[in-house]
Length: 111
Image 1 (tube, rainbow, N blue to C red):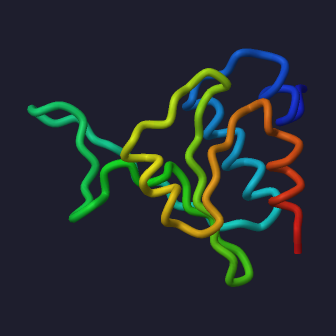
Image 2 (cartoon, rainbow, N blue to C red):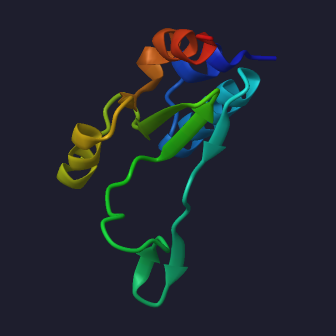
């Protein structure tokens, strides 16, 4: 059975697979995780959010009164201008890629 680290770094993973790896890792270290999913509509994919929701980070993680905002990308994925706008104003916000697995794990382990 492959470890989360092997899954993240030994193969090319999609953003969806990467998200599952990060969520599993976060849960392993006691984090609560929120992700707001888009839904298909007649007008295309939409996420039910009001006001300035476009570009909001993929995951919000919370543990012990600490909050982390994570935008997940493949090793070659690009951050959009709207996503960067959120990352610029949110504290503890990061772009997490599979190649950063070791650093992410260390960050999630911290007390």
